[in-house]
Image 1 (cartoon, rainbow, N blue to C red):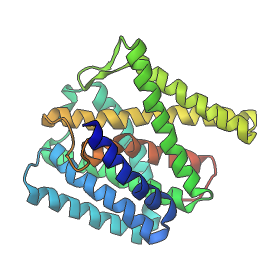
Image 2 (tube, rainbow, N blue to C red):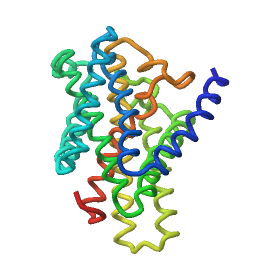
Image 3 (cartoon, one colour):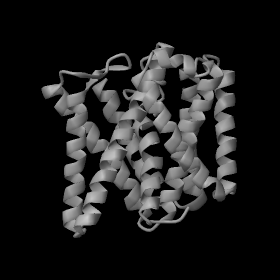
Length: 271
């Protein structure tokens, strides 16, 4: 398993670096779109569709919708607003699972939820890419999520006692959540001091980082909730040793659009 993980990571890392940071315009949108479409293929399985025909059909529908969003960039504000609304709803669904499963709307409703998860994450990345320091913004949100995951893992291992959402993901603890938050805030503080942010900028950045990291946890738990409901461990086996695409991007699907909205509210760029 470890060997598989290392080989897969060694192949994917340069591809990810080229795709995220060197591609521009349509090429970037297509690269991110491919990741999202693969995630859609997996999401259909999480929604309860085992047949390949329906799963491929859903992936093609998502690809078509991404094309529409690319052709009509004026829809970006609506997509990001949808993300904010959805992740608020998702927080409630996660906290009240399994009772909340009756609110999903069955398999059809689960597919609609997949659109709310996947489309805004693509839109958020496309928006960030177009803004000043776009590559650095994309790297920033990824680092926030990654360092929070690392901090949560070690804090949870060392101090984890109280379960965060035992009916969704028994391995996560409140202590891990706090540890992940503190780690991300320390990194944000270090960046702010290095770049000479004012006290006001630093406070806003810390508040924003805390919000982005918190919502990234909801993204992780949302996928875990659907996997638990579907009775599966991984979204797929597309990435040997790592599970599926959704298993790698679940936190980012929530963090990216919220990060973009916060930067927009701060006046970083236009929508």
